[in-house]
Image (cartoon, rainbow, N blue to C red; front, side, top):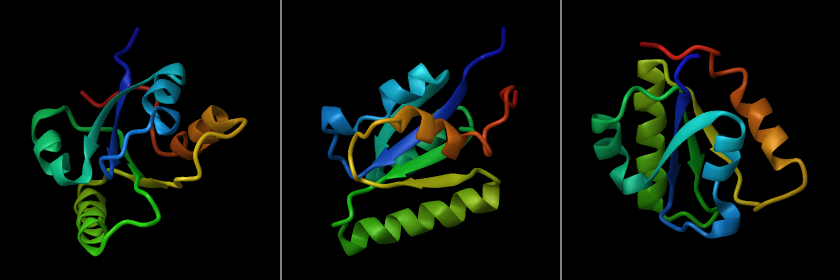
Length: 113
Protein backbone atom coordinates (compact mmCIF):
# COMPACT_ATOMS: atom_id res chain seq x y z
CA UNK A 1 0.00 0.00 0.00
CA UNK A 2 1.41 3.41 -0.98
CA UNK A 3 1.64 6.53 1.10
CA UNK A 4 -1.22 9.01 1.06
CA UNK A 5 -1.01 11.91 -1.35
CA UNK A 6 -0.40 15.12 0.58
CA UNK A 7 -2.39 18.26 -0.16
CA UNK A 8 -1.60 21.66 1.34
CA UNK A 9 -4.65 23.75 2.26
CA UNK A 10 -3.81 27.45 2.40
CA UNK A 11 -6.40 29.70 3.98
CA UNK A 12 -6.80 33.24 5.23
CA UNK A 13 -6.50 32.20 8.88
CA UNK A 14 -10.24 31.86 9.47
CA UNK A 15 -10.89 28.22 10.25
CA UNK A 16 -14.54 27.73 11.01
CA UNK A 17 -15.36 24.08 11.64
CA UNK A 18 -17.97 24.09 8.89
CA UNK A 19 -15.38 25.34 6.35
CA UNK A 20 -12.69 22.77 7.08
CA UNK A 21 -11.40 20.78 4.14
CA UNK A 22 -9.23 18.48 6.29
CA UNK A 23 -12.04 16.04 7.13
CA UNK A 24 -13.26 15.90 3.54
CA UNK A 25 -9.71 15.33 2.27
CA UNK A 26 -9.12 12.55 4.81
CA UNK A 27 -12.36 10.90 3.78
CA UNK A 28 -11.17 10.98 0.17
CA UNK A 29 -7.82 9.40 1.09
CA UNK A 30 -5.60 12.48 1.06
CA UNK A 31 -3.31 13.61 3.86
CA UNK A 32 -3.48 17.35 4.39
CA UNK A 33 -1.66 20.17 6.10
CA UNK A 34 -3.42 23.49 6.69
CA UNK A 35 -1.55 26.78 6.88
CA UNK A 36 -2.40 30.45 6.70
CA UNK A 37 -1.42 32.30 3.55
CA UNK A 38 1.20 34.19 5.55
CA UNK A 39 2.84 30.94 6.71
CA UNK A 40 2.63 29.05 3.41
CA UNK A 41 6.29 29.57 2.43
CA UNK A 42 7.52 28.39 5.83
CA UNK A 43 5.29 25.31 5.72
CA UNK A 44 6.35 24.46 2.17
CA UNK A 45 9.97 24.59 3.33
CA UNK A 46 9.44 21.80 5.89
CA UNK A 47 6.88 19.43 4.35
CA UNK A 48 7.27 16.97 1.51
CA UNK A 49 6.35 18.30 -1.91
CA UNK A 50 2.54 18.47 -1.98
CA UNK A 51 0.62 16.95 -4.86
CA UNK A 52 -1.64 20.02 -4.95
CA UNK A 53 -2.43 23.20 -3.05
CA UNK A 54 -6.00 24.22 -2.26
CA UNK A 55 -6.53 27.95 -1.71
CA UNK A 56 -9.45 28.61 0.61
CA UNK A 57 -9.61 32.38 0.87
CA UNK A 58 -12.65 34.45 1.72
CA UNK A 59 -14.07 36.66 -1.01
CA UNK A 60 -13.31 39.68 1.16
CA UNK A 61 -9.56 39.07 1.13
CA UNK A 62 -7.47 42.19 1.55
CA UNK A 63 -4.98 43.33 -1.12
CA UNK A 64 -2.00 41.95 0.83
CA UNK A 65 -3.62 38.49 1.01
CA UNK A 66 -4.45 38.65 -2.69
CA UNK A 67 -0.84 39.54 -3.52
CA UNK A 68 0.46 36.62 -1.41
CA UNK A 69 -1.98 34.26 -3.13
CA UNK A 70 -0.92 35.43 -6.59
CA UNK A 71 2.76 35.00 -5.70
CA UNK A 72 2.04 31.49 -4.39
CA UNK A 73 0.18 30.58 -7.60
CA UNK A 74 3.11 31.74 -9.75
CA UNK A 75 5.70 29.99 -7.55
CA UNK A 76 3.79 26.70 -7.62
CA UNK A 77 3.09 26.92 -11.36
CA UNK A 78 6.86 27.21 -11.92
CA UNK A 79 7.34 24.11 -9.75
CA UNK A 80 4.62 22.11 -11.49
CA UNK A 81 2.33 21.98 -8.44
CA UNK A 82 -1.33 22.73 -9.22
CA UNK A 83 -3.10 25.39 -7.17
CA UNK A 84 -6.87 24.93 -6.97
CA UNK A 85 -9.03 27.83 -5.82
CA UNK A 86 -11.84 26.76 -3.51
CA UNK A 87 -14.82 29.03 -3.05
CA UNK A 88 -15.93 30.17 0.38
CA UNK A 89 -19.57 29.21 -0.08
CA UNK A 90 -19.39 26.82 2.84
CA UNK A 91 -20.57 23.22 3.11
CA UNK A 92 -23.12 21.89 0.68
CA UNK A 93 -24.56 18.54 -0.30
CA UNK A 94 -22.08 16.52 -2.35
CA UNK A 95 -19.11 18.68 -1.31
CA UNK A 96 -16.66 15.75 -0.87
CA UNK A 97 -17.57 14.38 -4.29
CA UNK A 98 -17.12 17.83 -5.83
CA UNK A 99 -13.78 18.18 -4.04
CA UNK A 100 -12.60 14.83 -5.40
CA UNK A 101 -13.58 15.81 -8.92
CA UNK A 102 -11.67 19.10 -8.59
CA UNK A 103 -8.52 17.45 -7.20
CA UNK A 104 -8.69 14.22 -9.21
CA UNK A 105 -7.33 15.52 -12.51
CA UNK A 106 -4.26 16.90 -10.74
CA UNK A 107 -3.29 14.26 -8.18
CA UNK A 108 -1.86 10.96 -9.35
CA UNK A 109 -2.61 7.66 -7.63
CA UNK A 110 0.94 7.13 -6.41
CA UNK A 111 2.96 9.79 -4.61
CA UNK A 112 6.21 11.10 -6.00
CA UNK A 113 9.08 9.77 -3.89
